[in-house]
Amino acid sequence: MKQAAKYEKPARERGLEVSYVSDTAFKGPVGLVVSSDDAVDVETITIQA
Image 1 (cartoon, rainbow, N blue to C red):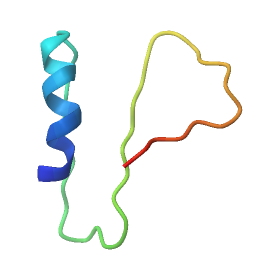
Image 2 (image 1 turned 90 degrees about the horizontal axis):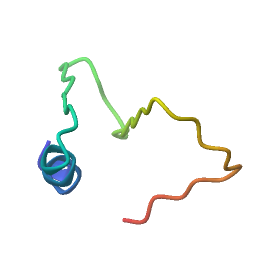
Image 3 (image 1 turned 135 degrees about the vertical axis):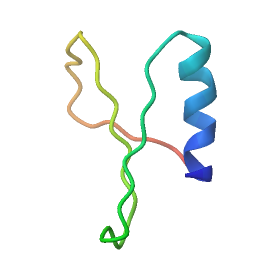
């Protein structure tokens, strides 16, 4: 979960809810889910590492 810290701090500073889901059965790449009340009309979204 250490990798998520760079997203958690700015979210909390803006009063946004942050939650984690963890399970030992999860194996493989990690995903980040961001949700909003507003739609985004963008074909390709890229998140830089």
